[in-house]
Amino acid sequence: MSKVYRGRLAPTPTGHLHLGHARTFWQAQCRAEQSGGTLVLRVEDLDRDRCKPHYTVNMLEDLRWFGFRWQEGPDVGGEYGPYCQCDRSPFYLQAWHQLNNKRAIYPSPHSRKDVAQALSAPHEGDREAIFPIELRPADWAEVDAPGVVNWRFRVPDGERITFEDENYGSQSFVAGEDFGDFIVWRRDGLASYELAVVTDDHAMQISEVVRGEDLLLSTAKQILLYRTLGWGAPKFYHCSLVRDEMGRRLAKRDGARSLRFLRSQGTTPEDIRAMWTLG
Image (tube, rainbow, N blue to C red; front, side):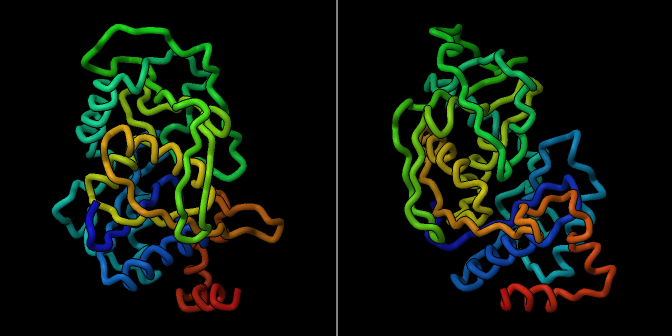
């Protein structure tokens, strides 16, 4: 892991950026600036069905309007590209090979909905479905390619995964209780969210990951991947979520709170940041 601070913005172009994205990303930029480090923009557009090119164009425009400035990214280049996940499949396949060679993953045809969420970051309120251990195969034939099947990471049942969050302090999750064997590769030939972000953050030498608190559990899974792959994990800083008047987490469907809508209504980035300062 790089000793020089390297942070990242990692939006998913499945809709317009909203206030929650802006606040988390702003925290990431502030921490990079305070450390005299580099900020990387990585577009997480693996989900071919939900990620649309026009959302990527709008996202870049909204980020610049708000005042975000990155030193590496799909529009400015850099030595750790490409900076769009849709172009990084060879990196993910290499990680799959490493896990497969260690027999840390196994083919799994058992999936109710083909684990539709595997491409996306989990959301607050998503219930963690614990994969039944009786569905783990006792053995499987060695293969040199993923094939048309899901692959799961076998978690160390009963092991407590702990880490120190830079914002929330000590965190602890138990493998097999808080989460079970999770998808790392989909039968449609795409890496899961967990494998993709771990691979990218390692390859891009990200030293600290800043993201929402709804991903605390996901961090425990990713730490297992880092460890198994023999990679040092970055530091983690999880931000509190922006909520509506009912206490619900903002989502991309909340168009009225998108940066694009607020901009059209004459709201300025300074107005928004002032609201955060005032709580």
